[in-house]
Amino acid sequence: MVVYRVPREMSVVRPGSHCVACGAPVRALDNMPVLSWVLLRGRARCCGAPISPRYVVVELLGGLLSLAVFECIVRPLPADTTLLHAGSIFATDFALAMALLAAAFIDAEHMYLPDAITIGGTVVGLATPGLRNLGWVDGLVGAGAGFVGVWLPLVVGYKALRGRAGMGMGDAKLVMLAGAWFGWPGAVFALFAGAVQATLAALVVVLVRGRIEEPASVRADREELQRAAAGGDEDAKRALEEDPLANPPAEGLMAARLPFGPFLCLAVIEWMLAGERIGDVWSLGR
Ligand SMILES: [Zn+2]
Image (cartoon, rainbow, N blue to C red; front, top):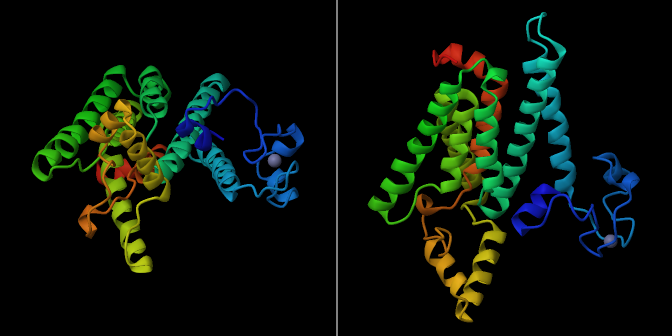
């Protein structure tokens, strides 16, 4: 629901769940994660419109992540940890995992990362370092290093050299989030593990499909802006001038547009679940 509504600037609270095809409200019993989709065989009860399997995939991944947070982070806590402390750790880490899950799917479709998640998540991370055995300074240094470390070379520097940004501001804010939550080692890991995984994914896509296609909805968003600008809409003209996605991608692999956010999100989740072990292996400390 968040993945669908946030890019459309809709409230995630009101109205309650309704059918995207006919607008009928969804009954509570038909709104159970995964189970309802299976019972309804992927079709809306109201009008029979197909319900995107993406809802089920996101719900299943959410369930797996809650299990992983419990097994990898909560269960290994020392025996004298209070229930309140353990509960707070589970709640914040699970909330981060769900926010990153939503961000990954939004970026995969629209190639943009909502500030509500990247900046909002950074604030939550800066406010809760004690839940991850970090000090206040660790979070602040990590957030600053994460943002500047991406923004300066990959947004400003790359643009000066090649005329377009190598990464978006959303990516810089997401690495800032990683640093706010897990200190500078988390930011470093997010950036490098994200880049390695994105490169592997790009190789697989090229091997299977022969080329990397821009997401269809990114093209649709751009065409809508161009129509508005042609009709004299000043806001749309300004947006087209500033938006790095405003022009169709150039030919060639180096110019291919691959959303980087999903791979950053994956790397942050990996560091959250296994950072201590990864840090030991690479002597990154934590
Ligand atoms: Zn319907």
